[in-house]
Length: 390
Ligand SMILES: [Zn+2]
Ligand SMILES: [Zn+2]
Image 1 (tube, rainbow, N blue to C red):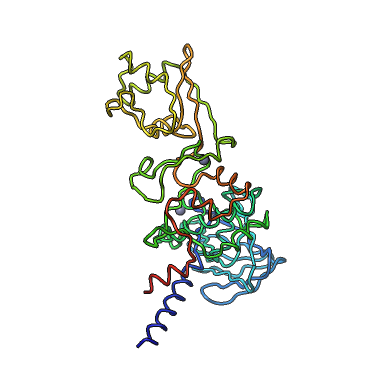
Image 2 (cartoon, protein in one colour; image 1 turned 45 degrees about the horizontal axis):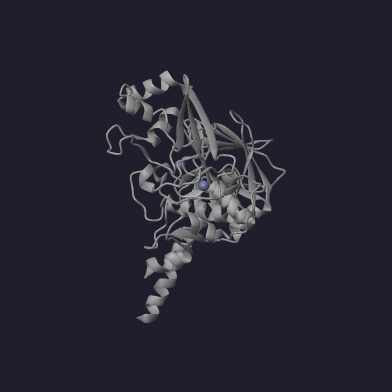
């Protein structure tokens, strides 16, 4: 009996791990092409039409893939191979990648590792990249964080991207893939190749994710710059999350996105507050308050009388006026109203520019993550599978 339990435990651990190692990513989400050109950039691939092996392609072969009457038409430079309900393009060796280029719209080539599944849907191609999770994570880190950061920062971003990906695997289930390649999920425009430190950062944190005290994957929220104070989750969204707590951040206030300025006329500002928020701009005290406001720390709500009456959420003002953040002071000079702001983004969770500074100062990635996420644990995926299999 004991032996059986051990076997079952090992089996479920293995099954759990294998299901978290490959992700299905929908490429060109909502901008699906009618035709693409594919060419191996590393290694070689085998092409299957309706499950039948058709040919092998390498960096010298060009494959044209087009949507035609609800099917996928395949052509090489010299011949048409036929039309198929489903085309699969599978790598022959580890580390292979393919360059993809659409023939309409944005023709910038993109490159992805591992396998592809292609179907036709209403005159467009649905292209799915079946990718090893660490290849995906490195691609996202490169797309989201750029190529000029220290390796320790790439480790931070790798753990966040991996946690997010695994936590949101069901997002596009009805569309036949797990995550899209746009900002809706995580931006994934290419495999990582511009800075070897990105792949190193991914490899050195392989399998590591962030969990809460119940060993559940966290919502690893992040933003560009908090302006010196991060926010509680419930200040911006509806739910309270123990690990997304407001805190002072001394790291980011000299960074590029820590400061912004917005000018408008006094008439427009007062009329906006009156029309949109029913704010009593004709009351002298209320009017003065909304023209002269300088917070000592981040306030979530503008509440001149501290009684909830006439209160306005700063995040609503941010949204309406398309401001960089919901953290600003208000000053009136003659007919002009100036909003002087701090930070860029919603302010919840990890502040990217603060984390970059910490990485440059030599803090290890786990200390940076613990600085911004309260009371969390960094664990390997196999540990989660172990606990779930108990
Ligand atoms: Zn998405
Ligand atoms: Zn910050």
